[in-house]
Image (cartoon, rainbow, N blue to C red):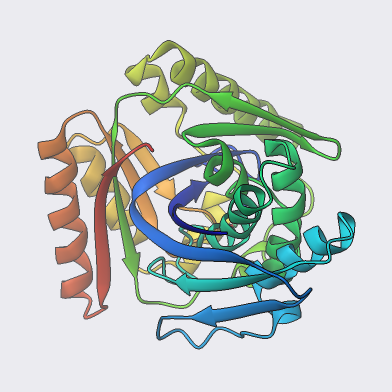
Length: 297
Ligand code: HSE
């Protein structure tokens, strides 16, 4: 048995919801082919130029499949072909796509032996391998679709949210920001005042998403804790954000741990204008960039 899957890119955090909110988008996406083998081995092949490791225990998809194999005591194995289009290190959930895709594909070829939460559980081993942390804010929307709230990872408690009819523009400037580094620089302690402000933003954002209240979404997309620290690693961040808002974006910020930046807009034309703006800002800085306009998936 063999399946071919499209696995979406994801925008984690959604600005104020560090490690708990995330959304799947249409573009870019990875393609994965997963087949069942009669022997208990895991074979990973990459059809891309990124030079990612193919040894199963060092590969984000491979480790997920090894864990599934071990847990269910399988006598069968998996062969996986990955066509990676979501660039590693972009902040658009490249590792999560491989990890979640492996879990989703395995579940299909094994005829639905796992619940969505079990797939999240196994996919988190991939994230741990990639960044050292078992976070599920990219994996959950990959597996559930749309926007998800990770209420807790231990025990796994995922709340799928509404998907407002909004456009997402994302830019990936070609500068290296490693998730592990951009986590390391974060403050370990925050003041009660900032915490209260952030709670207000997160609660407002979730309420706005559930009520399709775009104005509320816009004024809740504020981050007083993570963005001020991380944005220093992203050249052009302030310019992209300020000018996108002037052009009519509802709001936005760093996608995952960066360097990608995303903006939400109500109209396709606004989203496309923001895409052109983002590209021109990086062209001027002589930094190569990739821009995507999509919808919440
Ligand atoms: N929530 C994670 C972070 C996402 O911001 O570090 C990383 O992809």
